[in-house]
Image (cartoon, rainbow, N blue to C red):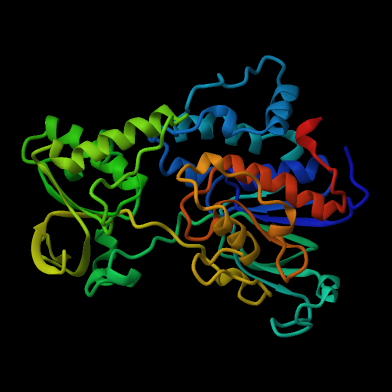
Length: 414
């Protein structure tokens, strides 16, 4: 299939689930596409590949992608619906095969980082809110695997670079706790493979876990299993949450994995494991590393408390890197740092506890004051943790109705 606008050059930043999907969608329409990925395709997912997703295959693959894979190899069988893959399974069975499709051959520039995006001949303050900015091509400053820097030109830029590489801080108020930055290289801000590669680092040690989201729940449950296997292992879990149980129940949860995690984490927080202490509401006031241990000052229920631990894990979320588009006219939400139109739509629909209840907010919410610049995927949700890959696939469909100028365009219904 080709598009009347096939002459447009599309640059995609990031070769994760949404970036690869956007590239395939664009190539199917006949656009010229270049994907820039600072690591390898699917690298951000592979980083937590040992984790099993809550959602089944059907919510993480598109009909376009499955169709393209089937057409390439008639013997290929689609993943079993209803089964929830691990991150590693998702990369190996879907993302990497997508990246190797003939349609994307030569399009993906791995080990290549986009350092900045601007407009040819314009600065940020020129032609404010004026659609004539779209007459000037984008200039992308790119650095390749040999450290060579060059400029790439494009008519459309899709930033699907995600948030995984930019962690928040564990200190009170969201800023680094005193001493945290100096110790950051010794603190883990990511999910750890406690049953596998990370086991020797935590077995027999005392660990401080900071956070109250599903990542923290996942780590707390993994620690309970490690404690049974490795005597001397213990966990101090602190959260900002004020409610008694850290995770509200979702009635008739359609995702069994999530329901089981919530139940286990709430049981642990209620004293279900003797070697895991849950403290809330609590904050990290300072942290200092000396003599191979951390001395941490916590504030719990308004009272200071000192703790000494061997390891620190901070599951405090991620934030988007907006530095690459600071010279573009992007209206950001002051709370989430996501694009304002989408952030407002998400805020208006935030009454449900279940992220599965979310649907596409529509193409108009993906627009920025900067013509033909779009932020998709996890990065479009900013600091919000409610993004689902399914929603990113819907965003891809929506954004190409804008790029192609056809509100009825939908390659998923072919």
